[in-house]
Image (cartoon, rainbow, N blue to C red):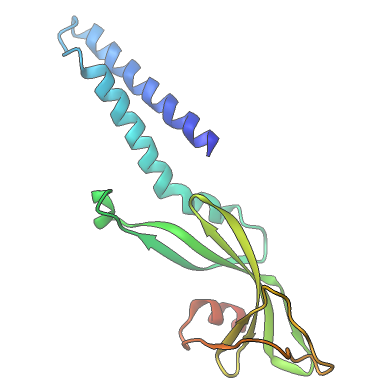
Amino acid sequence: MFVELIAVIFAGIACAGIALMLNIATGRRLPRWGMPVAAGLGMLGMTISNEYTWFERTAERLPEGVSVAMTVEEQSWLRPWTQVWPYAKRFVAVDTGTARSHADLPGQRLADLYFFGRWSPVNQAPMLFDCAVGRSALLIDGATFGSDGAVIDAEWEAMPDDDPILKLVCET
């Protein structure tokens, strides 16, 4: 966040400098408000650019075995351009590289989910998937496993068949 703030400030300074050079090149015929407006537009442009490139920059830095399963796009009337071009504000990544299953329960898989948000810290949660039935259970508070490998106190929730997280975990 600090690096983005510095980038926005430097974009404003650079655009104000370009406006100053244009003013000098035209014999100081441009209006006096040109430099502050250019600085503001440069800062606004850099902020918009950071918003739209955040998802790609974050997703490309994910480690091997962690795949993006779902994105949440944002539209806001306070940012009118997002009505035409929404941007990814949040996404869920699944660690398929370390997904586990029990030999006695091959239809169930345990995987770590990572929840990324534009201005929020990354949250991690283990989730158990029953691929045969199409349900899942968050294991945030821990879980008790029986001798056969089944989770005893899981709160199962049904998932739609086309759920991208369920598909990603069960296909790997």
